[in-house]
Amino acid sequence: MRPARLTRAQQQAVTRERLLAAAEQIFARHGYGGASIELITSEAGYSKGAIYSNFESKEAVFLELLRLYMERDMAELERIVSLDPKKLSAAVTGWLETMHAERDCPVLMTELQLHARRSPAFAKRYYALQEQQTHTLAGILESYFKAASVPLPMKPLELAGAMTALAHGLSLQRRSTKPGAPSPAGRIIDKVLKVLTRR
View: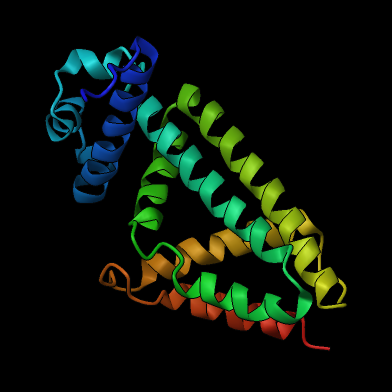
């Protein structure tokens, strides 16, 4: 039996998914500055026209990747903090140990932050995503501390921002680890959280 032909919308969704997967590889390999539309489309096996029918620019491609990263991480953390309080600490430790294990996210985030300083149009969209992530993380931290029956040491948004900065800073200070290796930054953040929630 021959497989059913994809509709135009389904074909476009497949193309978009392949372009994003290729972009993830190219950004990790060459950094944001070294990546190009040509490299991304070549990696995906498409012409340049394919990317411009799905994204308006290289910036738009990366912002979409960034949004997907954030959604994935926040959804997983929200699932973890909904666990039984007795299982919460171990689950958070496990997540932090594998944080960014398959992605060179901190380096790319730094490049994007620098780009946002130079491009007001890009900054508007970038900081909107960042603010959304910080608010989500703040809510997750509130749930984490509530489950530990310990008051937050500062305002949730301030703690969320500090944890994000700590994660990126610690990751950049250390040599790149092999894909799948435990995250040194995640281990340190886990220790900080354990200290802050100690009764």
